Length: 249
Image (cartoon, rainbow, N blue to C red; front, side):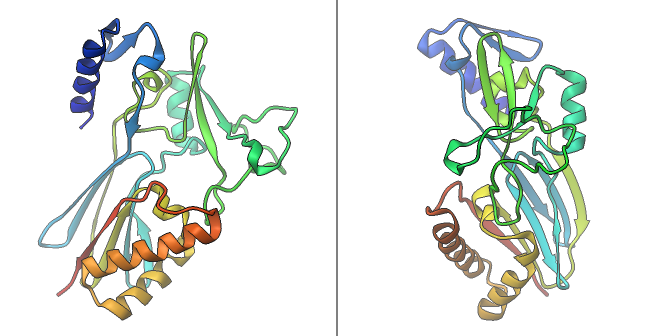
């Protein structure tokens, strides 16, 4: 997936007549804005025996719900993840992990800076980006006079940010799902609208209504999420793409 995106970017730059070269596995351009854009990716494979293999890069998550509990199948690729911070700082120490200052949230910028690490007592961030209470954070990558921002540490594409430590390499999780399991895979817009602690309850309620019909569960999930988005964020269908896998006897 990364290689396909990489080759597409080179063809696009050639098409628009932009100067670039490929060096050390990166696309180097005269102007960073000549090449932008990227995507998250979550690949899920479930065998007939119920073995689950999940690969992800970015903030599209997958959860396994069974036996009254929800288990995440995806890695944490947020800028405030200590492991991701250590990885990026070792390779690209100039990259900054900052809290996202948004003047619309009505909070003043702190005079002592807003770098995530080391964590400071009494300051969790500027505003909550989802119902789980996570704070909005960004990676800030400086390339000469150009500054780029991204809300995740791994993705497909986003070539200018790869010089700041963003990687396409996925996290990998493998587990065995028992009978009567539900796996939900979706982009961040879905997960912003439900607290992690409510995933099991919402799924059980939907299963009680629709059984283990994957299409019906997915439709119900989308409709519930859209209502929650309107209620809590004043909008709907922001970054919403998802699907459901059910495992039954």
